[in-house]
Each structure stands twice: as C-alpha cells, then as structure tokens.
Image (cartoon, rainbow, N blue to C red; front, side, top):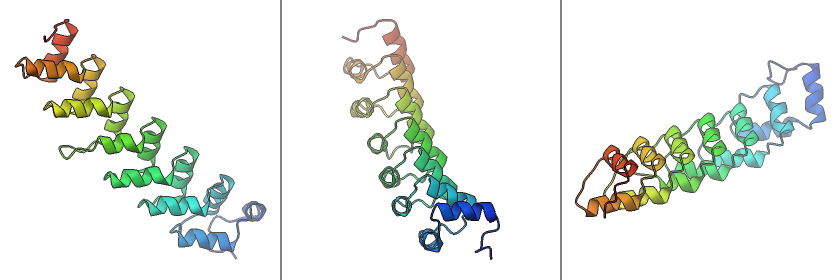
Length: 193
C-alpha cells in the first residue's frame, strides 16, 4: 500500500512515522484543499511546523497556494493576515511576489495607502517605490496638488529630493511643470518663492 503517494518508500515512511504524519493529519490537509502533496512536501510541511491553522488562515485569505508555496511563505514569515490585506487591496499575487513584498518590508498599510483608481501598481512597482523611500504621505500630498504621477516619476522626484512642498510652491507660482522640469529646477537650486 502506497496510500496514494507515488514517491513513498521505507525511508520516507519512517520519517513520516517519526514526525507523527498520520492519516488524520493527511485528511486535515486534504480537507484544506492540499490534495496533490507528495511525501517530501508532507515531511517538509511538518518539519517546518506549518500547522493546519496556518494553512487554513492562508486559504481563508482567498489564496490557493500549493504545498511548496506554503513552505516558501512560512519560511519567509508571511502571515495569513498580510495575504488577506493584499487580497482586500485587489491583489492576486504569486507566492514569489508576496515573498518579495514581505522581504522588502512592504507592509499591508503601504499597499492599501497606495491604491489608486487611476492605475494599478504591480508588486514590482510597490517594491521599487518602497525601496526608494517614496512615502505614502508624499504621494498623497502630490495628489492633493493635482499631480497624478507614475511610479517611475515618483521615484525620480524622490531620488532628486523634490518634495511635495516644492511642487506645490511651483504650482502656486503659476508653473505647471512635469516631473523632469521640476527636477531640473530643484537640481539647479531654483527657489519657487
């Protein structure tokens, strides 16, 4: 009897017995939607202390990750609540994208605060904005002053030290400039007052 696993052997059966991987545990995983696990994944899930509660929390967030994905997410400290927030913000990301966001320190609040009906930011956009130090407050203040900018433009302004106050002062002075023009003025020490 292989119990439905094509890759079972005596060594893995011994490991599974030592780790208390039994039929009850396997049935719980199947009930949670993990039907295509092999014995190596079963052992990896159990050896990393990936609980059925964790799997239920991830599944409850609306993501349908594989056993290998669950292992990756758990190894990187990704919590189900983070996945739920990403889902609420309209994102359906791969385990790799979620891991990258998490590893770069992009939290759910940052993602939520950057939502815009004008454009949908990709996981890569969110990471780049965060890594370049573009704050949600900066983006909000620029929007208040009528600037709807692309991620690349936001990064360029931030990297050159052009803050929302500078952009607002240019507008108040009657100058409606694009980001490149604002950067040139800022880099040349022009004071909009």
